[in-house]
Image 1 (cartoon, each protein chain N blue to C red):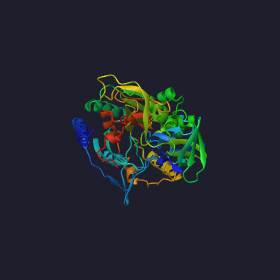
Image 2: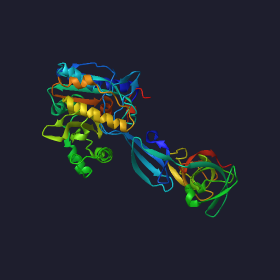
Image 3: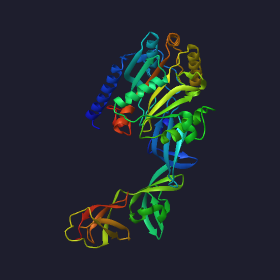
Length: 190
Length: 280
């Protein structure tokens, strides 16, 4: 249990059995009144957001969350299979659960999966992955060094990102898995 | 703001405030920061300091000065409240407090309007009664039937977010249950003669027609002591010297204003982090 005075942004708590994260927190004390802790919360299971206020002395449950490290094995259509690094137990996640991360997992990649009880809530990949650009239009002449103007490009599994005009097919680039965007170029096509 | 900018804007404000009170004939006073007995209020907790307590406000000493014949006094100094920490709270903060013998909450309101002009906050305050805003934004009237929890939660969730932000706002005439050390309206004891000033939706100042009835004061302290005990909070002893001094204290108006929050309002800061020079 947490005392409400311990609440802060980023803290994970459990409300009516649902794991939630405190996304904003405001200590209020209306003139001569009691302390009120106003929280904005996000349900980690459903993604919905809501507000809740507590008074001083209230207690809140800690979220029963556990993060475990897995290695990505393979995927079969929309079924992605990971194995637990400690127990080798396999877990199946759907493409929907992975979101954009389905395009960024590669075999043997280590990922952290956050569980609420037995339910996988979230997956964290390494911040950056390297991918080869398999298709993009050539950049317009005169803009080759500018990174302000961008053009669409695709990686091997069809995921589309926006890259600077100087990027060509066959270049190796880094992608930030947290936002799914181009980060920088590793090397030109050899 | 850089530290130097914070220093300068604070210094300019303090100069304007002092100039305002000096020109209005007030005396600047200094009263003890360490107190043997802090003011007993239900939801304000004092920070212990050895066998003493750090003041939560200079109110009790100022009233003792009024009882001794002081007429118009003000003080700017540090006050301390245990456990109050957030974007708008810090356990150590700077308070301006002033009193006017012979005054009441209306004369404090006149002072407030002039003080705001002198520190560069223009626009006449919009004035609402507490009943009015609760009926408008929360669909009930706490003066008719009071509910402490509902009052506090609605204040934070429904009232304060809906107050006009572009002009100063004064909320006045609180339910008698929120009287603190304010006098009840002689013609309507369900209402305490108290107002609060809001700037940009932030509570800045609190003013009363001061309670000068020692019997009523003792009853209130005893009630809050019992409520504090029930909540497991420290119960402070009764300050008999203070209760006695009320017999000599003239009718007075008093007002307390948070300097750090006024700086937030003047600079548009979202948090005391942008105002305080040192924050632990």
